[in-house]
Amino acid sequence: MAKVILYHTDGCHLCEQAYQLAVSVLTHEDIHHQDILDDESLMTQYQTSIPVLKNIKTGKLLNWPFTQQQIQEFI
Image (cartoon, rainbow, N blue to C red; front, side, top):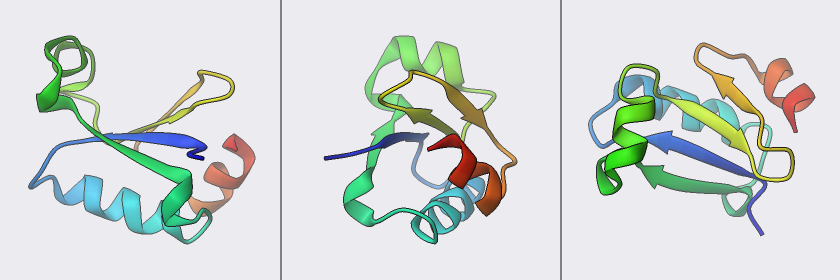
């Protein structure tokens, strides 16, 4: 079951970097990908701040830029 949601969009190089950083701490199964283009409200909320990680359990957000250590503390 996923632990975090990665808000992203295709072609976002920062999102790709964020994903690679996240999988250095979490497993692929721990990360749910959510393309903000699939939901207008997400697009409005995150269009200028992606990539963003959301902790599913706590609802807290971790905005880019972040480090491995910050991800570990976040989860």
